[in-house]
Length: 222
Image (cartoon, rainbow, N blue to C red; front, side, top):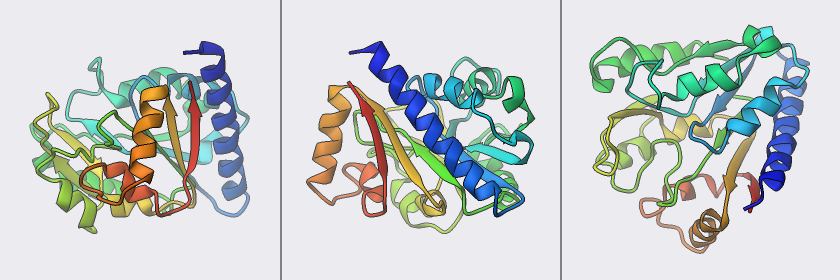
């Protein structure tokens, strides 16, 4: 594992995403960026925050979220606020995926309304991938996977035996509504999972396959 190579990767991805946002802002009033959480994108968030952009015209939301308070340690919203929305980037409009409702099932309709007001198609969707081949909260063992892969709804409440908290995720159809898709992964284990995904077509086994049929720019470092 090389911290230097991962920092270079984060910087390269940040510049590609910033260029995409600049290009769309030259043609449209607003540009939408959809981000993923976890530890991998933290250096990317920091690099993107340093990019020169008309941040006041940029909308930011998430591909998925744990149904926890926004200030919880494992909240993706907290991650974005702490590592991206600072300095000039604090002028961006951030749209979280949680509500005050006790469950994601109760909050999903309100979240969908919130998402409907954004500037779709997104300029870019940044996807991550887990060792089980999940992306966003499209988990192989989720009871709602088939729904999330097929529905036209913007957001789906998700219960997954392998995960401690309930979640909400953008549907595959909504995630596909982007001009550009990026996959940001690090480590040899993730490279091996991606190779397996590319070698087959069962989306329910490895849900990242739902995005391998569209142009997908893969950013990987050891």
